[in-house]
Image 1: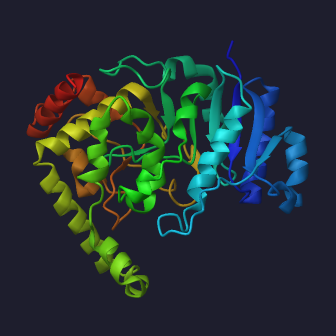
Image 2 (image 1 turned 180 degrees about the vertical axis):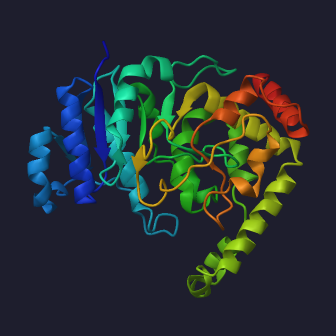
Length: 359
């Protein structure tokens, strides 16, 4: 018999039809015994602005928690336009304070739709899917694995944060208000992805700070234009030659880094943590998650035999981005389980795993 889970929506209310459909499906899952509580943690006054949602809240029995915004909106270039990050952190913090220890929680947002069959899978198979089977060398950080839909192969801890699932006590480690990520490190526009997931591991594994200093950004052409010539960038960003040039630049940098054993040690340690503490899955069901354009189309699969093939431009899903997103962890599993073909990259990553184990 499965234990029920809590579904926690955080943030502002968006996409009425998507949100209503999610609530309708979750109400049915409550009747079937898969979901116990549906919650919305948002800022004070937000629900009152959306009377069209009130009936849907009532029908689904949504518990609404309203809290003040975090007092981090400072008059500084580090914080301007970053309010959403602090609100996301605050929403998770506030929501979890109303949830009992030992509860498994699915954190999501109003503009994200998750296939009900996948929610059932999480509810019924969580003890198996989230069981930690390989301990970290200096001690585990979580009690159970945390599910996330995707990770980026070359940027440690750049992982999905629109929705994730895990034990309440573990998810409590996934919010922070650490200003170092803006003042000390230069992580770019996706800082919130990294700061959420890397923070819990830094105390035991300060080794990972190198990913935020020495390897913090790619310095690709588009970033240079955005910083120094913003008006020109807005005019040029849709041109294919800009996208291609940016992608070539990123892969030139990546290929150089793949010759650097320190960088490979960092990636190996990242993959070790992914294998031990995370469950990556966006492929169990068709259209498993609907969230903007990011989840649409064919999802590339990692190569479970040859390590080098995963670091190729052919694995880029969004032309011009140069980003290597993966939606399952076949490559990571094969590396940690010694199932990859023997190649130069496989040997270097395996050596990196050994070094991490000796930290």
